[in-house]
Image (tube, rainbow, N blue to C red; front, side):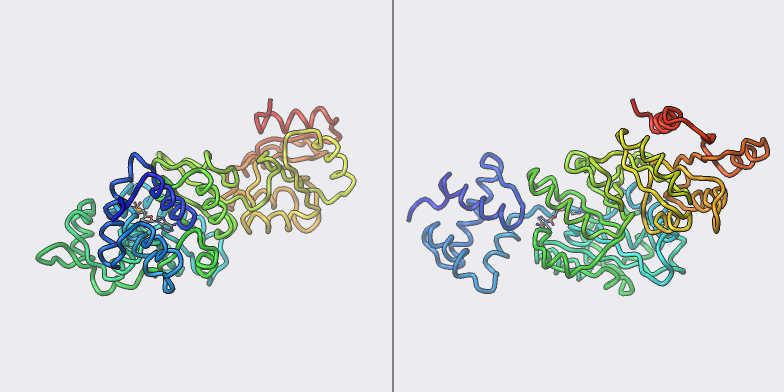
Length: 407
Ligand SMILES: C[S@@+](CC[C@H](N)C(=O)[O-])C[C@H]1O[C@@H](n2cnc3c(N)ncnc32)[C@H](O)[C@@H]1O
């Protein structure tokens, strides 16, 4: 019998695995693991050479079970409850309340755990939601867990966990939601089925499309097994799967900014979260929105902003601009006229401040009026500054540059 796994065959195999799963195996780190796996597998299927095994895998695997066995043998499924627990705190205390305000009533908030492994991560979300989220009575929350490894998905559905898996759960929470067994712990029956577990490959577009859209995606400790090209592909898949304004959370060793700029990073205490930008920014330049009921006024500001490193969106009506903000648009700067029909500048400012994603966004008011009482009112409503009309191009340019700290 020829040596089962030569260096050349290692590369054949790992190239095949990489193309189908994104998992990137390296000669010095993974040769022994793959070699042992193939030897064991050859015994099971009665293959006496690498060639026969590889042929079976590629051409004789009608139901995909040989490939599934290989995937199951090669994945690293390490996980436990409350791993990097600050992220669950940010989810329940910051992200969900914000999305609850943004999303129309009656629609569920949907969270994806990709990958979920044996379920500890999505069930940690459920435990935090039950213990801490104040919105549970007003809003349906759906949690879906996916993984490419069929053994972990089957285990996740059972809800049976080892002592190690539960070690970081606070005792009170453990006592409330788990039953002690001789070995390990079972989730209580009421919790089984609260996460919808599915076998799915992140690189399979069909699998992903079937899952639908989400408001939050946790993808922790999977991208570390991929190379840059695959990470980029996964980031774009998440972008497509997220609703506007939705968030991605990665593991502590994974950074979206190294992969793509289509998400805006936000830091909440020590936790980095990435928000989908709902409006396309030219070369990721800051988004400045102008609101003015006069087309002529908008045209003259356009002459100033065309030469600036910013992305501009203009609105003739404050109502339309506010609706886009409510739909997920997150501008970096808002410049609005004061006197407008239907909704004036102050009313618009109130709406902007009431919305969680623009509560602190800088707002400049364009006006011909300079009365002191207006300045007092503007300050009370959280206005950032005034640009007095008529302004010359240099003044407007300077005001925008100062707020956005452009060079
Ligand atoms: C280390 S676990 C991370 C589990 C959990 N997110 C955590 O951080 O505790 C990595 C998981 O990624 C899964 N995985 C690897 N490649 C995948 C792919 N292409 N699609 C879906 N899941 C994948 C593996 O099966 C494994 O269970």
